[in-house]
Image: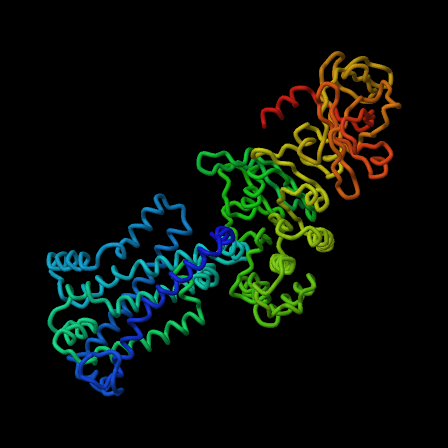
Length: 270
Length: 368
């Protein structure tokens, strides 16, 4: 891949660059629109805004159960990201550091939830949980979310383990470290970028998931995206835009610092 | 006391027989190089000594102690990897101090020993750097310091200079040899680089196909190898087919190639036996055609390859056998060797001829 760019004629480069920039604009524009709309003084969503205000931010608390739902979402996101990351550590060690047969097939299977439509996963899960009598409980919601996010830490951890050379662990062994000491002092620090990026991506994916959660919640058990969507179906004002802008701001800050400190995006793309 | 003892070591990885009956005895303080083409089992031998591979048969003892059931961390070996394997998340001193930390040596004792080790490789000033901030040569020395600071019973080096550029490699070769001698540490070097093996080691073990073909002092191995395989593997050589002609009081006469005959002092072969004769290019003298005699071979030049101090003259005998001889720039000028198709005479130094039985010649052909 590195070589091919050298042989690429300039005119293709111009085309590739413009497609790249158009894609970025296409991805970023809705986000910008959301932020602009959230500062709109008017009751209706309109663009461009005629007058600016921050009133809609004050209105966020009016969204039904938003505080409770956000708390549940954060809790589920934290728990599922933690469990998925721990499972990801075990899986990636087995996939990278052992002579496992059919590694490619196992990897494909473990990351398959991201290739299956979420609605299909949601329906399958709710039927399964009804069957075993645990539907609409916080732990079946948690299990659903673990399934949803598991692929991310596996991918990032496999990447960081693959990048870290086996000879590091062998060097540590020859210097007198037991297997346990090697894991704690060498392997785990080498996995750190993958660990952090896997955890952060899991958390974010779980936190704003709608299609799977919608099948797994009932009554008092609710999540932030569900309550936000309920509000949108019944109201036309830009309050959800204000909430989303706040959310975008917080996530941007988290990702900015995580990327600066641990280069998490580079690991997720690998 | 013996520094290292391998007795009948056999290793299978899956169905592959990687090491076949390896016997190796290394004296305390001796430096032995395992030399061979890739896939010959030299790295497997090193990993077996380090304890990463447990041989299915045979035994390994280090510094007189059996290593049976000893995991790598209990063997007290200093290992330097080809890629150095410095821990990227630790500073230079943390890297060097790692083995001491695992041995529960803490505080000032540890930092003193780390500083000593760094001073030994002349890199004390880099102790707070991260490995990513070091050059290749510096990394190599840090890896060496890290392996030596634990005062290992044996030092294992896997292609230690392979990743360095030519000039640095020559310099490190000298430093490594001096350090090894000064510390008197038993050392095993794995390398595919002949020059590295011949210049660093007290003895060289040439390995082919999971076996030690021959082990000996570098000079003996190069000058008088016991098998044609080793002769061909080390440096370059010319292979000729000749017949033992007659015994004289002072030796025998070998003949072949029209009127050519050469007298050698030592020969254990029978009269009329066809044998293989090998000679290094540096032991062939190039003469002008006017000096052709019964002890010179007639040849035709093909090509001159300039190699810096020396010129390698490729030529062909009348029967098509290709030969390589060495010359210097002035002789090339004088004899006009640059000209292709020039007739020349080659005088093979009789004392440098190596005689092998024909069967060993056939064996080398099996290999290719």
